[in-house]
Image (cartoon, rainbow, N blue to C red):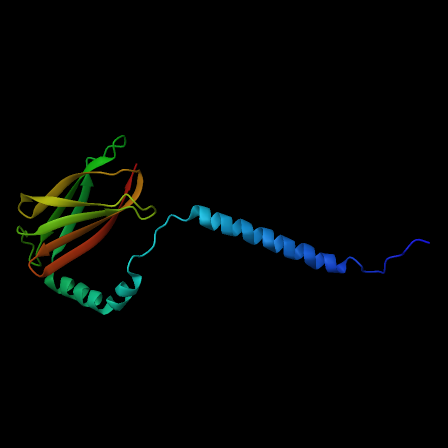
Length: 162
């Protein structure tokens, strides 16, 4: 005599199959997340969080100082991705600032290993400039740092290269 299965004998297998789908989907998501991670992270994130009030005070002091920056990236060629960074600094009355130490920190926001720091030389009358080569096309962050004694100025601009 043939053994007859009870009705609903396959119900537990529905839960087993559903858990199998969950495990496969989660495994695929983990593999994708690990394979697409660029490695970028904030260095010193805890210390930066602790220094937040100091950064706010520095931003307030910069605003009160009244320095103004006019920034441009000129002469960019698509084949070599080279160009010239130009920065013009004026004080709150519009007079050129001629005795600054200027640095441009160039960062690739989406990939690590391409950051560079370029000093900008004075060309007179508050104008500063330097030639720069960008290793990759796309979006870059150019952060201009200006120093005069204890006074610090910084401003960030995004540029997009062909």
